[in-house]
Image (cartoon, rainbow, N blue to C red):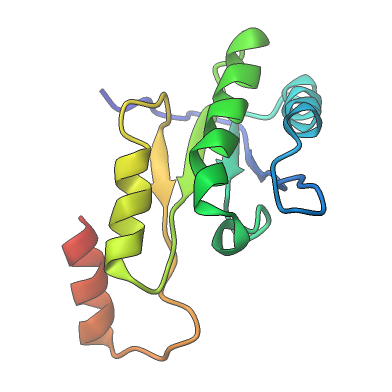
Length: 130
């Protein structure tokens, strides 16, 4: 069932990482709690602000699960959208498949980056993913 967002706003979360590129869970949790206290109605996790293309594959789902946990522990009904973008359809599909079963509300995708694409190529890109 689709949950409609009647009002409010969604913020883009950053992804705090240590010098090795691993998630700093405590910092991300504090960020989520701060946003909830600011009456945010949703989060964009791992968008460009969260450096989705730069996140290690092993950290990708861990970031999303951390946001879900912080949201639940703070009794928030905020929506969660997750970035899953890549230049490769296969890598996008891998990211989406890794999110199956998680309590998220949607996936956020952009057009492929670093390459110029025709309108037909973009339609094929998104149609294949859908």
